[in-house]
Image (cartoon, rainbow, N blue to C red; front, side, top):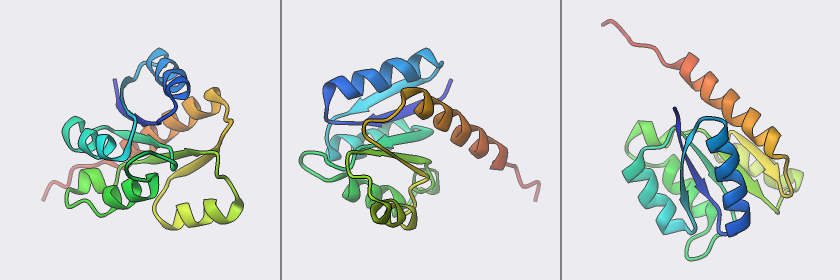
Length: 133
């Protein structure tokens, strides 16, 4: 069971994502603003983050930057899927340059999100190896 952090300030969207990811077998923690998201990243150690950009108190961009510059490699390299109503091609390019693994524009397909989550987690698991030295 993988631990996923859903960062979304819209309660109905948060519930939709949480329900579907839980049905897919994941353990889900939610955060509704930037500071709460960063606290959850540090305390819950998720395997993946879904992140809205338009958050109260601290933007999703700031959360993204804090994760990507985190001193713990395990956190700095977390797979991140941005879910945002802001979805221009220029924005998606900027997000990719900032270390986002994937961006879905709102409204999005929950089925597509679940497939992306499964794919990113599988790719991450395949990339992990123990160095015998």
